[in-house]
Image 1 (cartoon, rainbow, N blue to C red):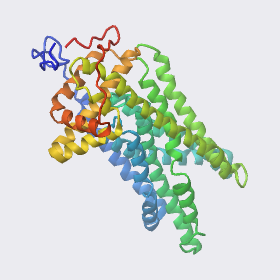
Image 2 (image 1 turned 180 degrees about the vertical axis):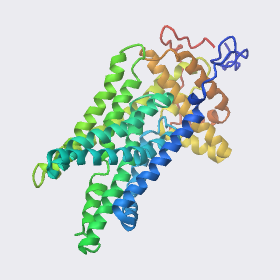
Image 3 (image 1 turned 90 degrees about the vertical axis):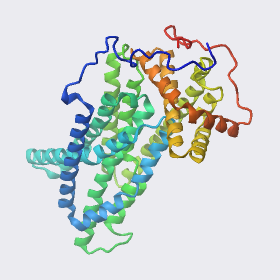
Image 4 (image 1 turned 120 degrees about the horizontal axis):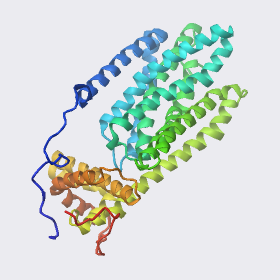
Length: 433
């Protein structure tokens, strides 16, 4: 075949269309636009209700103070999760949905369910103190983690192509929990401010507001994301499990992650019952080490994705779909950044968009091929691979020059793939096009 194949080789029918050309029309409630509108309406309604409930509990002044303080860690946490997702960044709509679900729907479910359960226990036992303790250590972890896990489940089911691995699960779960913690912090900080107002305590380090801010925003802004990330890891492992292998495992893994998140949440909430310094002991000996371990795991998984890009894409160089320096450039975050800067400088916004999308599609292609090599690809492997190659080919005009520049800038003599064609799984032939 020619160094770069004539493209597209087939013009007879659209990719993925049955030979007859008949495309089944989804029923009106199955259309994406209808689902999106219904979901947006649900989140907007939940947001309005939770706003009214929090304002009723804290008062207008307390609500504004709580809002101003609670928003401080949000940009840092969202930026951290987006940074983690740099190799194959998910669309912003998923990030917005996850945050909105956590801040509105999950928070509303938690506030209503927790209040109802605590009042019911207090009435049944005639012991408000034990009801509060049981609500915090048993009811709240179950309700809150289940409500947050619903967002991860929705993305897993309805945005499956955006949910390709453990990193995606960590990001969606973490952003959802960040939204939930944001609303919860408004409530706690607003109530703390109201307590200071009643007691006549002015603003200062001795105030309840300052203590609440220190514990929830300074010491443990990562607490809720840390719990829910365990659920995201369960869904992420299920995402890379072959559909035709281990159906039970694909169900049990997310459930195991959810139960672990509930257990960790309950342990954290119950730390105040372990004595005067129980909270700080649990924080230092448990929360911080687990946070460090999960951070290492997330960074390790991101580096493994970059390695997969460098190892899997040379097969497409041999087939003529990619230029020789591209696997190296696409497997380096520094080279990717330089390619985007080059495109933006010489081609403007259109070129920047094309190169950014090229990097994302190439990463998806490499991860898809890696799953295929390990027997974990679904039945739509060939169709999905062809879609990604089509997307790359249509953006190569801007991307190839930018990536070639980036490869030369990072390593003056970039490695050229000169070996024999890389043979993939038995069902895969890199020269079939």
